[in-house]
Length: 423
Figure 1: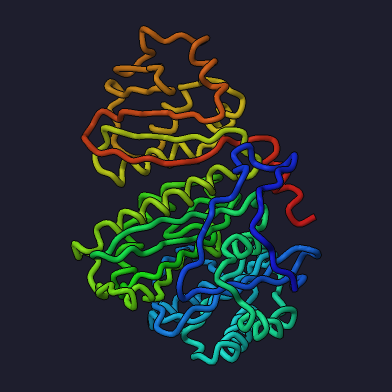
Figure 2: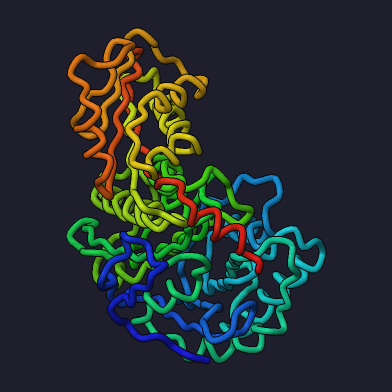
């Protein structure tokens, strides 16, 4: 068993060009402790097991994949979320424990039993997530015997180690933290997530875990998460593929109550306004980090759609663009082929006025009123496409609603990574 220490990022030739030089500082959060281990689930000499232990009284909320072939851990979390209480989170990487039949359920049950014994709590207070290869049975015997020691040695100051342990094809751990006030009491929200491929979240992201010391009810947390996931994780895509394991969980320890924070039970409470904004900002930060670590990425791309019939229509148009292989490869090749944007808007199925449609690459208007803009200059736009970060803005010309979606380009490296994934 090995614990990681906080350290600057060590970039490699395969690291995302957007990998940070130094990880953000995530301070210990009252009521949460972490431990990691090398269990050898799939790879040797790397941490692949993470345990978070939370104080009694911690509540939980979550959003999970809508995939019809979801994993056994997802099914377990759905049941645990009905009770809304949490004491232990167990996450493994290297094996998704998805499409593993009764063996998968048995592995989850064995994990929950061992974790509950380690923390002296009810199995209903255990949350489990797995990420990695689909279809391979997960042997719980490789790690359940470690849970007691991990639970007893867990420490508060280990967010970065926890984030590293859940990585698969990620090139860097993704962390974020925010402060907010509830009444006169400052609370902390901190989280981490993983994801680089098979990313087109449907109610969640690949794996994301958020912790706060705020005294907020499980119901209020659930309402806030449901609201903010639409404009954060569900507005980010790498390749258009929704995982069997998408899981986003938030845990509130309630430790701030001891500092005078009055508990809040309603998401619409005015006292949660600043907390809600901070949570949304943290979730947006993590979603962008996932897009910036997309497998094989060379460019980070933002699609902004305006003038749509509704926010959901704007988001659907933006996702149609962000998930278009032919458009994403053009961006990778630094080709300002705005005709591919026209195509992606048209195939979205949402209303768009062809004769009022307008498109911008950065500050360069390339199309207006349904045809190429008079001021369009290929040389200038091609130069813009050489930037590492690209923004494409679209006016659908039919309404007043807007949405933003984040993605990355599609390169040869993406093909190589996924062609060799199980090798």
